[in-house]
Length: 119
Image (tube, rainbow, N blue to C red; front, top):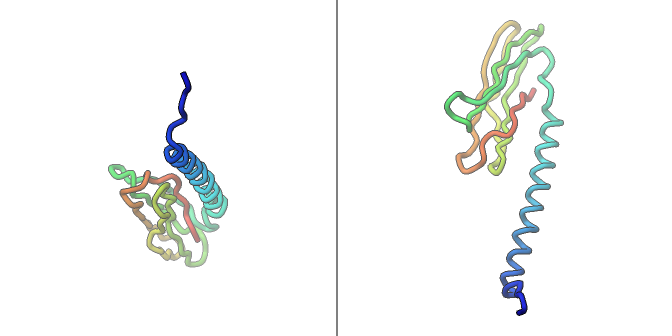
């Protein structure tokens, strides 16, 4: 009995889906790596805590304190998986002040993959 690989159109669709999946995996990995390299450190003069909202895995925050001697501006940046990345509001802190920036990934995506603080 001869085994069939399926119709030519089915084989072509399978190949296209496999290629697209591999391309997305590579491009997503590269984007995440570039984002991590660009924003891996907390800006100088700030001490920050980052995290996800307690009841919403799509909302992230950066809570920062300005330990420096001049005003500092920062914002939170969320890597959102399948959805576009998002930035929170820009927050300016005078020396000694604390503040928070929040952002929300689109609900269609896979949630927050990474949280960084941007200067």
